[in-house]
Length: 244
Image 1 (cartoon, one colour):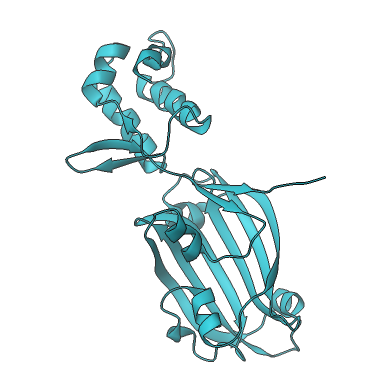
Image 2: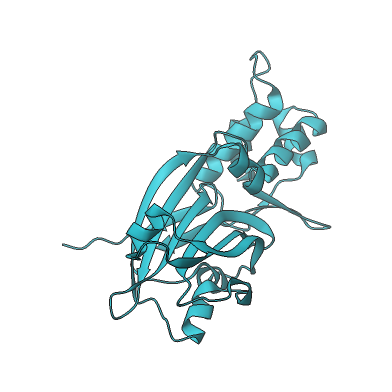
C-alpha cells in the first residue's frame, strides 16, 4: 500500500481539518477492503513524510480510527488493521463460538443479570403466559477486550432459574442444561446509536449500528431465547449464501 499512500494526501486548502481528511480517506480504504486484516499501517513518521503533514496530524488521524475500532495499536509493535467479524446467517452459533473460530478472545462485561416478570413483547416473542418469570441478561460482548456489541437476552425462568449462574457463553449454559437451541429467526436492521449505546460501545452518538433481534427455539418448537444485539457496524459483517 505504500505506493498508494499519496492518494491519501489531505487538501490543505479545505476547511476540513487535515487529520479528519486523512482519517476519512483511510477509513474508506479500509472499508473497501484495500487493507488486509492485521496488516500493519505505516508509521506516523512515514505517513507524515509521504503525505506532507505533521506527525501530530498523522497521530490524531490514527487515534480517531483507533477510537472507531478500525485500527488497533499494539505496544512496541505498531498499528494494525482491526479484523472484522463475518458471521454467516446459514448456521446457528454463539458469539463466543464465532470469535474463537476466527482467533479472537471472546469476553463479556456484565451490566445486568436478574429475574423479573415478562414484558408484553417478551410474552409475545417467547409464547409465554402473563406474569411468567424470565431471566434477563445484559452485557457488552468483547473481542480482544474491544466492545463489539451490546446484548440483552431474555430466557424463560423455567430454563434459567438463576441468571447469575451464567458466567460465559449463553448457548454453552443452555447446552449444559439440556436446552440446546436448534433453530432461530433473526431480523437485522440499521439503527443510529443513541447516547447510552454510544457510551457503552465507545462510539459517537448517531453512528450506525446493526440491531439484530433473534428468537431461538428448542427441537420441540418451544422458544428458549429472545436476544436484542446492537452491533458496531465497523466490526460486524453478516454473510448469506443464496442458491438457485
